[in-house]
Length: 485
Image 1: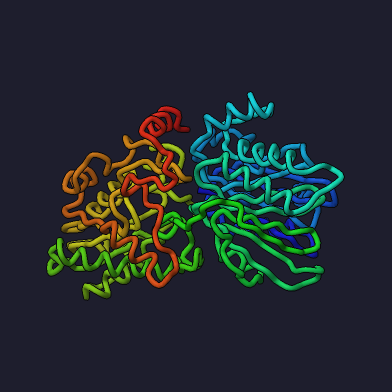
Image 2 (image 1 turned 135 degrees about the vertical axis):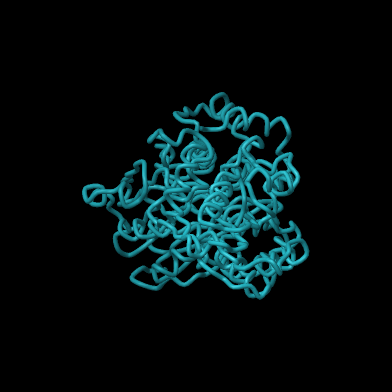
């Protein structure tokens, strides 16, 4: 999971991209980067850490140009501690290309061999984004000459890229002197939204981003989502053209975007994240009513912030009082994306504090958006008991996470997943809860896609069914053996 943005404007874009990345900070806190294009000159600045601590005034002054892109990184491949693996990535030929990528490629071994042996391209890192930009550069070099450049040549290159690359990818690239390219994998697993505003260019000003909130904050009208397999090319003058570049595209977006990753004020693939989370709460309430002694529950409490909409609906539908018992320190990063188990455990106590007045002597029902490794859940249950709770019923708005996620979320090993190989009563004992209730898989999918044109979701971490069809048991073993620390 990462956050990406690209902007074509009539004015310098450095501050616009900086502001957009600040809005996408929840999607990645390992590193960040900005690149801009001034004529045929590309400028780039990237560093470890969060947006507001990474860039200085001198960095922003050096990022001249009216079109550019940006990235916030949450490492799922490569080494998060190495600054050279921060995005964007640059290749010199053809033209000069800088690219950012949100997702995860699943045929990196094959691509690495092809790029070294067949394409004669050198790789400096383990990042699959470096693989992606080199594949794009190789295919673009085969399509065009320096003397002649056309968007159709770019689309031909993306078409061949789709045939070579497997996995999930939403990508934005700058092609020096020519414009900005955005494209999405043929399954549309990772989000990419297009916005437009009329101001100062022959065509229009454009923005492409991981989430719609970036467009709204920048004064853009949301035009639509980039379609699965589609490529969009925007010239420096604001002329936009697009083409479907995949043979059999089908929209199967990632369910975890709606459960946890995206901000609630975003709309992706025509689905409001906030409204989807309300519906998840409605469905979860029905399941809780079946399996929990609701008459003995005194209060419903969310784990702030992403589970709050679901918890509100659970309380409303069950007729139980809603209370806020956990105070959140907003200056601590999201524990799910902390690098390493020890850091996650330490961070839970730093991030959340239980208020004894809300827990003492009460039978508490806690609602969380999901349970992944169980670290956060175990700490939360213990905090509730230490604050005086009489009993703790723990509920998850998502089903049990039993399988590795290989499409851009850091769940590479079944050994790390608390639900892998365990029945629900065993998981309850593992996290220390009196009762544990999960959302049903079918209910989760129905709640998210209700009222939209989306027919199905990517739910591999819950079901073990990988939509790209090329994820084998051997590949999953390799991922576990080579996962980043």
